[in-house]
Length: 242
Image (cartoon, rainbow, N blue to C red; front, side, top):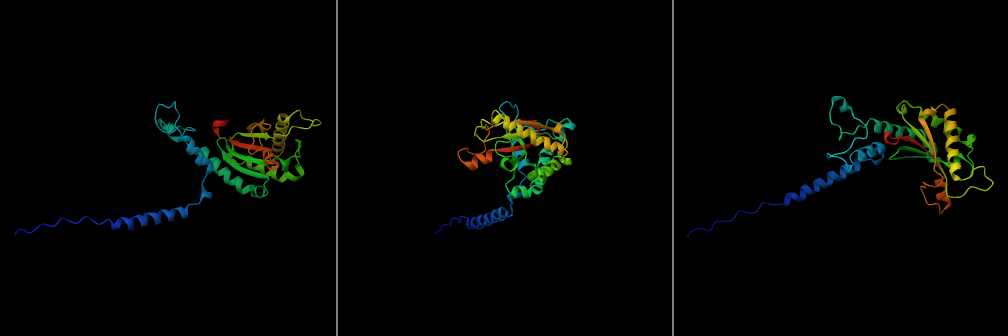
């Protein structure tokens, strides 16, 4: 009588559990090593923008924010973003965070980045009396001196800056010297630039703008929100916003 042949056993999948555990542990290990504070926000923004596809592009890939080094070799650099300007702003941001640490801690200054570039925000209540465009120079001289020195740093040579004045939505008083918040915001920006120029910055690198209450960062429904909206933004402009 012929013996019945045994079917081969299916291979064990027990190893997959061990392998999955190992991969999960490695992922947790590298997540623990990641420090978000080390991320260069400006450079990350530059990379993100460079990889965005425009509808009018005839080829796939990102578009260059600025001409890269390979342009000298005659290459098609449509998908090769240059990072020198982004790296420059990244270094400037790190230096600003260190230089203005006391002002940031006291909420006199905030430092952020957006699509325009590096934004240094001066809390208006610390620099100006309410409804006034006269700088409180006795209280803010040291901060303005540090700002002027910062804008003269070698890595910012050739950059363009814009001083923007902003207000809350409270109308100016009838007895005020300004007809509206438009004039008030522009005058504050202009006076800020005048003091920076007195302390050594090159006025030719700067422009000013007054936006009144048209660009609030917070709701004007609360006193705190209005206080944050009364501000001066000094922007180290990205090349696309000159």
